[in-house]
Every structure is written in structure tokens, then in C-alpha cells.
Amino acid sequence: MNATHEPIREEVELPDPETQPLVHPLDLPEARVQFRNAWLIGACTSLPVATLVAAILAYVGRTAVGPIIAFVALVVFGTLATRWSTARAWDYIPRKRQDRDRPLPSLWDIAWCGILALVFGVALLLIVFRLERDDVPLDVRAFTFGMCVVAAVLVVADVVFGLIRSARRRRALAGLPGALVVAAATILAFVLWFDGDAGSSELLWGAVTMAAAAVIVGATRLWERRRTAG
Image (tube, rainbow, N blue to C red):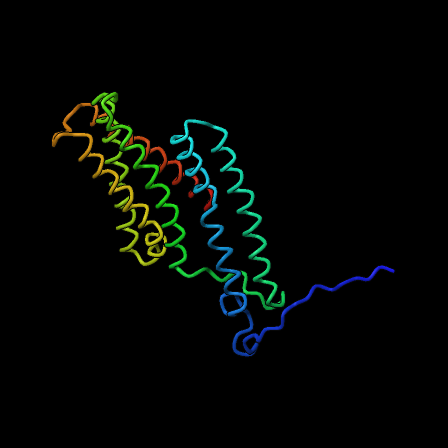
């Protein structure tokens, strides 16, 4: 005789439905830990983070097997663990009372981007120190630095203007860690690559190339936005 076992659900005290009809795992101490763990796993194993980690491992190890394994493991196991922990957190709340549309705290967005910026910063450091070597021509450094300067100006300007406008402030705060990393890497590159003088026509061409790429990307986004609105 086969016995069916119903899943065991822990009973928790939910907020009064009259005052708070919809509930989020962050509202319940019992579910908050599971939800926070899911978020942390997701932030540390997101696709951009996994890609950067694989690239760093490929550069350091000079092999492709290890980085591929690391990338697949981070993405697959990270996704599974995130979904499992998230599902367990929502299990504490009856389906009809689940507040699925509530945005996460703004500090969580900043922390998420901070984790990505940290890994991105490690990758930028590897690039900066690699291009510092004597086997890299000065013209290559100058061209790269010109691109870096324009990229840093665009990123920092986007964050600054976003902070000024209240509608974009949350997004700008999330982009702040990345902007600081890019700006710091650009300053470090100037200090390490040049002896106080980065004057070169290649630097100008690098800046023009990055500016042209930014214009193309911006025009494409504007066209997509207008097409979607239309």
C-alpha cells in the first residue's frame, strides 16, 4: 500500500490581511534568510559575473578547460540554488497573498552592482598591468587609454546626471560602483603606462573610436525606444 505524504509547511504568523493584504518574504523573519541567501547566490553567480570570472581564470591559467567548467558551474548551480532558495522563501506565504511585484530595496541593487563591479575591477587590473609590460608598444597603450578616458567620462557623466534627476536616481546609485571602478582603472592606467605625458595621435584616435561607438549605441537605443513607443 502506497502512502502519499503531503509536504510539511511551517506555520508562520502573517501580517493582518486587513492592514497588509500582500506579503513579501522580507516581511517574515522565517523567510527573510532564505530570500536573502537566494539573492546573494544570484548576485555572485549571475551571467556577467560568471563571464568575468571565466575570463580572469583563462588569463591567469592560460587554459580554456578550467574557465569553461567554472562558467558552467557558476551559471547552472547558481541558477538552481537561487531558484530553490527563492521558492522555499515564498512557500511561507499563501499564493493569494504573495507580493510578487514589490521591488527590492535600493541598497540591494547597489550591492548587486557592487559585486559585479568588484569582479570587473579585478579584470581591469589584469588588463592594466598586462599593458604595462615592455613588450606592449606605446601606441597600443595610447590608443587604449584614449578609449578608456571617453568610456570613463561617459559612465561617470551618466551616473552624475542620473543622481540629479530623481526619476533615474535609483538606477544611477546602482551604477555608482561600476563608475568608480572604471574611473579608478583609468587613473591607474595613466600613472602606470605613461611617464607624465600621454600625448600621441593614437590617443586621439582611441578617443574618437570610443566616442563613435558610443554615438552608434546611443542612436540605436534611441531608435529602439521610439519604435517601442510608437
